[in-house]
Image (cartoon, rainbow, N blue to C red; front, side, top):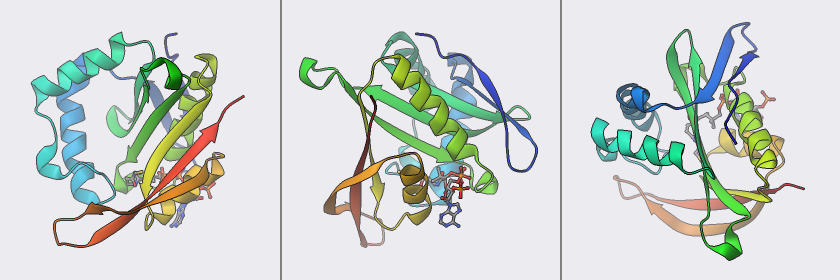
Length: 181
Ligand SMILES: CC(C)(COP(=O)(O)OP(=O)(O)OC[C@H]1O[C@@H](n2cnc3c(N)ncnc32)[C@H](O)[C@@H]1OP(=O)(O)O)[C@@H](O)C(=O)NCCC(=O)NCCS
């Protein structure tokens, strides 16, 4: 089913528009990704691994064409400030489940954007019949873990040293999931 755009009033009184990404957003999505991957190490994608615009266009097209995939953007005054994606698994025996990831521009952390994006995705996923949404998060990413717990996600396991950063440091990765009825 189509994702219906929505407006959400944030803690600072501004209104966030949440809508499905469009192929025409590709350039702005690439710029956004360059910014957020440079702001923290919490994204698995390194800044030099961000797609170029034509690859991003293809990815957005795939997301839009596959009814069980969703990519939504949060816009403040026309600026993309958040992206959330959910991919439904494709094998029959796991097709009730999907994996999500989210980011918010650092400048806008702490005003409820992450919460609003996750709520919108969860409502859509319920309507689509998803029964399980899983994600992976660095064990050290306290803010994100708090957000996920607030939304009902539960810790399921720990992948030790699953990430090796450019400076040689390792990060453990938590697997978390939400069961939907
Ligand atoms: C994690 C992230 C998406 C949160 O987005 P956000 O817009 O700041 O989230 P919200 O403002 O809705 O806050 C959500 C919850 O985070 C927690 N939180 C907020 N500030 C916090 C802080 N300083 N320390 C710890 N937890 C904090 C609170 O539980 C908050 O809920 P509350 O406002 O009801 O108390 C954002 O910080 C981000 O993009 N980080 C970098 C990329 C990333 O880590 N992505 C996740 C990879 S798995």
